Length: 331
Image 1: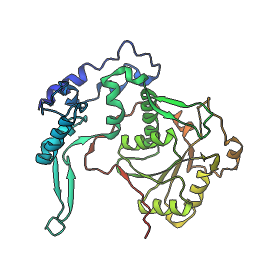
Image 2 (image 1 turned 45 degrees about the vertical axis):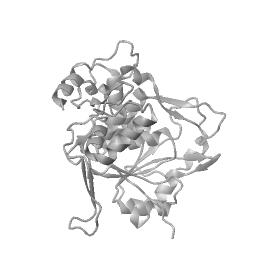
Image 3 (image 1 turned 90 degrees about the horizontal axis):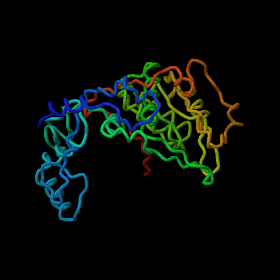
Image 4 (image 1 turned 60 degrees about the vertical axis):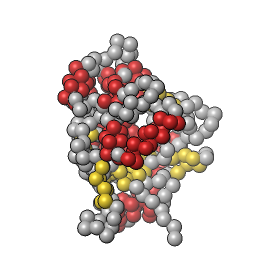
């Protein structure tokens, strides 16, 4: 595969399209993402013919027969199929080992599952950067639509360019406070745009995020903080669902007073609806009741003012942990 050629192509034609009018420094010609030495995925050369030519996965499956042919390949030759699937991503180092699995617990190896184990990539880059690099107009397109709790309120739209800028800046906030590759970060957030920013920022710098459902009690949170040995928590001051507010920051304070949460050194707090002028600040009257521990608790919007939006993604092995799933199992 001609990845050296693709690499050269990806780094030599990264000038901003003249029609792009984003004023953020995200799209500045001096921004480092314009010369990122990432290997460009070959899926952009995928066949657009009506008949699948089996050299790469199609952008869209056009017929049931085409679907059956692709499915058949995935069963007969999984290594070839998943290699083509990998070509749809951007890699620092394309994997040579595709599928390496053992499902027989009785074998000497035991159950062991590895995919793309020698590949190097970054999930955040694949979610955001590469799309803007390959189509600069995408920076102006809407990536997220936030529906407020009150149906009569206006929706809040976030473009790909805005999302990437915010992710880079928050990633720099995390790094500024010592968060690094392999660290576990507990995320206790409502369903808001900032939750997406937090998860992508962790992925960008290689930190492992542990998402804890925003409806869990302080006891539940403390247990999950302890289980993943987390020293950093990301939360919001309040969450609102169905017109009822939830004091998320207060629950974190309670969790950190317990033995299981005593190792947490840093708490980042997003202010609900901060900067969204079209949305009502429905928790403004409650904000004065928040407990605050200086040196441990930090408002995210204040920390963002202290960093820039230049943050290179951390190269990660494909088998490096990305997140920790917290489940509730009832017996």
